[in-house]
Length: 212
Image (cartoon, rainbow, N blue to C red; front, side, top):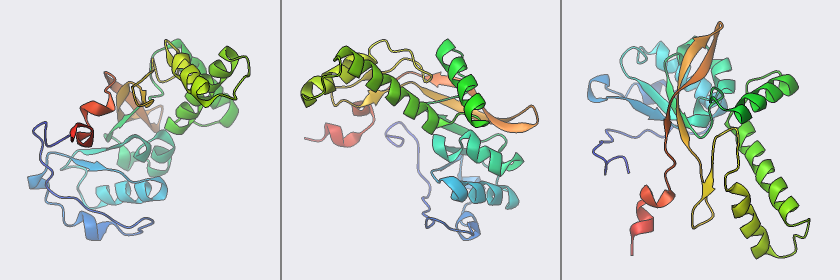
C-alpha cells in the first residue's frame, strides 16, 4: 500500500456522513506536516468540504487529492472555483483521447446536457460487456458458468470509453486509471486528464491477498 511504498499517513479524519461543518476536522490539519491531503467524500459532503477547505486557507498550503467520484465533473459544477487545481484518480476521464470516448462524451452531452462522469462510464462499459456476452451466447443464459466465461471473453480487446480492459483471476475488472486535474475550461471548472497509469491487478496492492 501507500506506506509500503514509502509514504506516511500523518493523520486520518472521519467526519460523519452528511456533515454540514467540516471546520472542526479541517482545523486539526497542520499544513507544515503534510505534502498533500487525500479525500474520499461524496455528493454534498464533497461540495461542502472543498469549499470550506478554501475558506480556511488550506487550498494555498496543501495540495488536495481525491478519489474520482469525490471530484467528478458533476461535483465540480457545484463546487466551482474552490476546486481548481485539485487532483483526482479515476478509471474514467472525459478527456481521454480515443474514438469510443469521444463518441460517448458527445452522446451523453446530447442526451443529458451534462458532462459524463465515472458512473456514466462504468454503466456504459457494463452494457457493452453484457450485450456482447448475450450475443455470443445467442441468448442462452441458463448456465451461470457459461455466462461468467462469456463476460470474461467479452472484455478481451473490447474498446470502451475508459480504454482497454481485462479481468483478473478473481473476475475483477482491471481498467487503466487516469490522473485528472480540475482546471478552468471555457469558464467552468472541469477535470482534464494529465496522466494515465497502467492497469494494476488487485493482488499488487491488497495486502490481505498475500496473507497465508
